[in-house]
Amino acid sequence: MQSAISIGAGLLGAFLGRKVASRANLSTAGSAFRSIGRSSKEAGDVERALENLETCRGRLAEMEAEFKSETERIEAGVDPRTEEFDVVEIRPKKTNIDVRYLSLAWAPYWRSPDGRSKPAWR
Image (cartoon, rainbow, N blue to C red; front, side, top):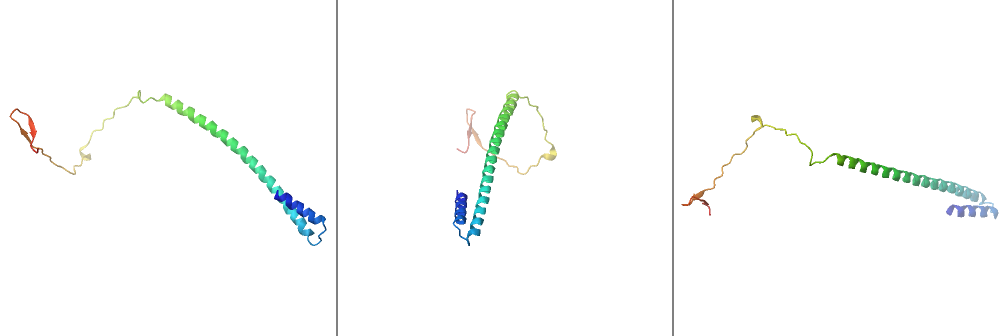
């Protein structure tokens, strides 16, 4: 819209006969035409970007569908309830044992006449 106003103002100034400003008016009209060219190029860029966006959205939908089908295929092939496991026994070696602390705990009990044990700390 601004470009159209600049062109109109430039042409009007050129036709009204301003001798001193006629070059400036032609220059203004030229820059307005260039501005129109840029805006039409940018509109084409936007249109191409929208087409690219739609293409990307379509590809994303395809990839999501492929991911879902692959996930379902893998889940159907593996059932943890029926999976067989191998038992691997690892025996300790004397070189892998390292005793750092040793403690002794003692809790005294009293034996009652009927043979039952009763804690001595109560």
